[in-house]
Image (cartoon, rainbow, N blue to C red; front, side, top):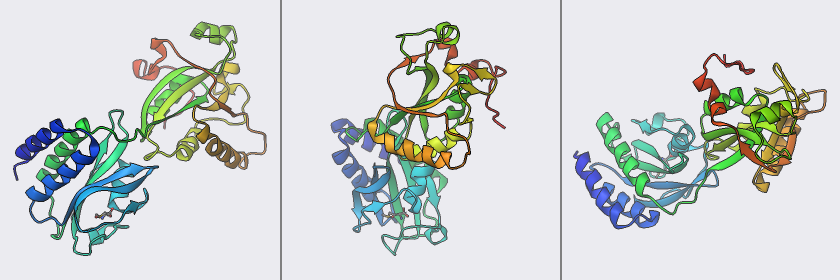
Length: 311
Ligand code: SME
């Protein structure tokens, strides 16, 4: 199979039109015309954290796939290609067409790295897709995602204060589904505070991490549960060896739709403690990025102080 030629054909189509509907429609048709021994080729699009049927070639297919379900859901959640030599051995496989015996599903991303879509190809043959097919089709997916325009942006942002922001940033950077982080000073009255002002003049800001994440891979509730693992939620103005109002814990949301999720998560957390929670639950009032030397501090200083124990 000449995947270089297939990729060149896709490039030509993509240059003619980048809007995702015609591009996906023709990409599916191109796969359908080119690949032998397949019975379905097409796309599922991420919508509200789950998958909905997109352009395809083949028999009519399931319209909705929950993120927990099927090979497509696994590709979305794990953000990696699923090669399934025998679909009957895959727990939770969804048989849209009983003739399918093997399948490959590849996630596609936005520029920020969130999963926007999955490409799904099914075959009536067992073990239809080789490592060469996987490499060629992943290249096809990379080309497609660079051109595809007009898909809803699905990245979300939340602001989390959990004590010293050096360790918190590293913790969130290690988490699957986190797209980007930045440390800064949130919800204090002085504009553009410096680290020294926040630390010594008690400006009232909290050391906070701006966390941009892919809600389809990491729903807010799961992100908050992971955040709870590294904070002492009953400590007041104190985490680890750090004391002061800048080390308070807090969840600051920029999207009012997040408020009930935050409230529910904190209610469930409170039930696990005898003392009242000290974690703030507030809309974001302001966030001032910290000085460059504080960004990714523990990458720059691997032996630097950290109140979070990564083991
Ligand atoms: N088999 C897929 C469902 C989509 S159909 O193959 C078109 C799955 O298990 O996710």
